[in-house]
Length: 349
Ligand SMILES: [Zn+2]
Image (cartoon, rainbow, N blue to C red; front, side, top):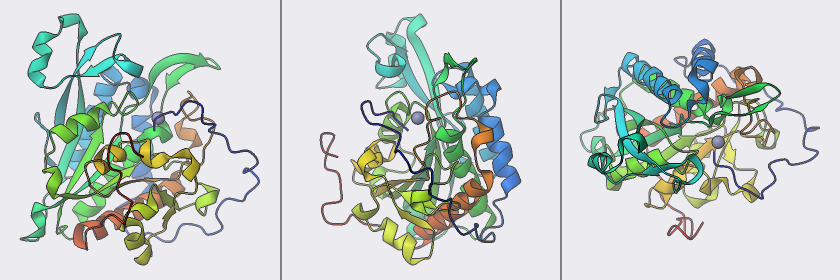
């Protein structure tokens, strides 16, 4: 998730609120198992991934791990290079937060001095739809796998592991794929996308939007998963997730009506709807929301965003809810914007 300067990420005196009362219900999607969630999270947030910075060796290692999992799960490779969708970049002092600029085309690399060239990758696989009509439409399920890399040490630790932000969402993308691949074939095609460059300006998503694997006009919904590693007492605690921009489209009410434990974002003052990859899709007219349970913990964007601070049972329950949500979106009515809900352009939230 992107930092917003000047916005306090600490809400005081919420700590006393109890964690959610009800334990996560028994598995409704047995394909999703806590041990797999834990193992994938531990791999992506391991020190060997060096914080998964965009266009770094650690980022590339994480991408290989995700692609290998997608292959094992039986997804179809949908990148330009197997599961990899190459994202051409130039290192530049003008490149914003990460010193990286997105190029307009892979050929653009030829125009950049060799020392400034960089390639990052999105990782993308799909499950083809089974319905003769609906298979031409797609649901996009995504999370960003990049994080901040190695940086200023805090307490002797310089690796920003990003376990919650957003290894947790990346694991969700993989595990939702596992659940859908294990069940009946979805009616619509489901695109599973792990993006790079989110932390440095949504670079991977901007590239995907210019090079979608299913045309955006036929991409009928986007569910992004970001920071589900810890329960949020304001959303009901363990096993509960919240959806950004809940009231903007019918997606939230469709999920709620199906009994899926996903509630409205309890932190509207944080403007999370506009702070992650989903906003880029929403501005293209696709009902696009982010599922999260971020409780505004203070380990955000510090080296303390570590695996051992993640509540894996909670996270597994949220992934199960997300898998039910994606199944519903893939097989049921497509969500639509509510009046006034669609963001109209880059200047308007
Ligand atoms: Zn972040």
